[in-house]
Amino acid sequence: MEIKIIVGDIAQIEADAIVVNLFEGMEQPGGATAAVDEVLEGVLSSLISRGEIKGKFGEVSIVHTFGKLPAGIVAIAGLGKRQDFNVDRIRGITGDFCRALRKLNCHRIATILHGSGIGGIELEASAEAIAEGALLGLYGFTKYKKPEYEDIEEILLAVREKGKVPILETAIGKGKLVAEAINLARDMVNEPANCMTPGQMAEAAKEIAGKYNLEFKVFDREDMETMGMGALLGVAKGSNQPPKLITLSYKGDERSEKAVGFLGKGITFDSGGISIKPSEGMNEMKDDMAGAATVMTAVVAIAQLKPKINVTAVIPATENLPSGTALKPGDVLKAMNGKTIEVINTDAEGRLILADALSYAQKLGLSPLIDLATLTGACRIALGTLYSGVFSNDQDLADKVLKAAKGTGEKMWQMPMPEEYKEQIKSEIADVKNIGNRYGGAITAALFLAEFAANTPWVHIDIAGTASSTKESGYIVKGATGVGIRTLVELALREAKSQEAI
Ligand code: BES
Ligand code: ZN
Ligand code: ZN
Image (cartoon, rainbow, N blue to C red; front, side, top):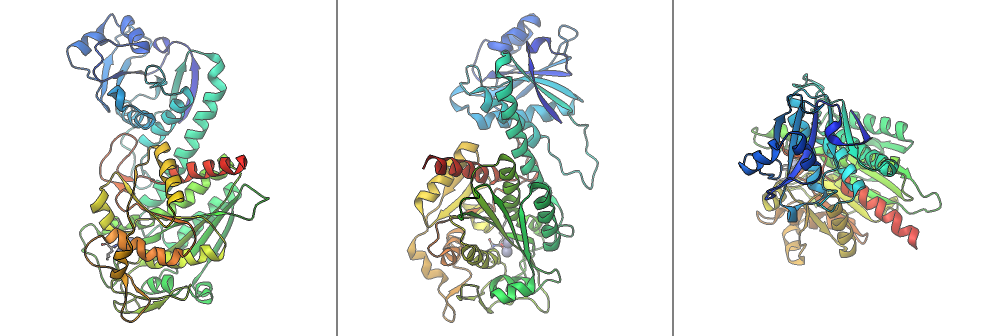
């Protein structure tokens, strides 16, 4: 799909559909909507006064033009209440109107830069959000099934001033590449576990490295044994698929030795192991490598945006399966940092593989560390499917992550890590055990990870609730969401900028 700027009046553009908008509660259309209304001889204002078009957020009203305009269809996108409006809502409504128009067989659509008038949003921010909303909202996982609708081939963004074209093209370029990285992550997560084994994940990383000129390394079982990664190896024991530890490095600052570490949980299928999960919904556990896909594709976007910073993604990848060789409840594992872990529940495997990944990241000298993991059902219970949980041993770093997230519309909420709960992961026979009691499960999981983050500034983002969606809404479609990528990219850009200032 192409996204282009076009200078001129939206009403006069030849396209299958043009898109204007309305804030909720407005009795009279304004701006481009008013101009289109005039050509349509007041049809829009009468639909507004009849209450048929309300402008509620996410509402897409379709009006046929019957030859009064070059475009056959006018879509009126509801922007919601003016006081609730923000850039993320532009992404959302764009996803909604793109899907609505695709259903109507539109191939070429034109739209204004939503929110840039009375919405008070800058033109570039609007263009970037429209590019993201369109690509994300129109995404489908079509590898194994033909799509229901034909693609929208072209989106034209109508602007009035010619002078703005270059900066808007840059903004569209950025939006597109970030959205494409997110869609790449979605493809990886939606891929069934028989086609996304640890080995295939390593292959995907290798391909990415070749394409974007990144440094790629992969370690196998033997290397892990040499490095003493008993926790990762323990989880991998039950599977016939060889585990992989993958790193992908972007070097944007040759003069610096420092690098940020992005760690991603790469369980390509989580059956629970011997502590096996109920079969209902177990298929969803192919998503348990969403953290891995996030960090990998965040690096893809960063490599194209080229900030002056170094980033290394570290991905421990394995299946978690029951078998005659599998890890058993009660087993004790020795992690890379020498700590012993009593495995009470083999389904709490994410923290085991991340424990060794955290130690390895420290061995590489990476700092700060940010991990993303579909770690606990408890986090989904606590925060639902909209908010990812943020946990940290360093408040300054947590604030940076939360701020970056806010800037990109990704909803995150910091959770506490009280010392008192550490009691829960004390073991009688080992340094720690891998689960706590029934309550506060997302927190005890984070406290377990903190044991392995040691003194390195670290943030853990639990995306168990947010990594996939059962509903289609705005720029979110069913299946993998690609959550976290925008935040990581934004964080890298901001960090590079703040380093420059020093
Ligand atoms: N991968 C799961 C967590 C999960 C649950 C992700 C639902 C996405 C949706 C994780 O490995 C797991 O099984 N966690 C257990 C931990 C428990 C045994 C302490 C859980 O949350 O039930
Ligand atoms: Zn599990
Ligand atoms: Zn898991």
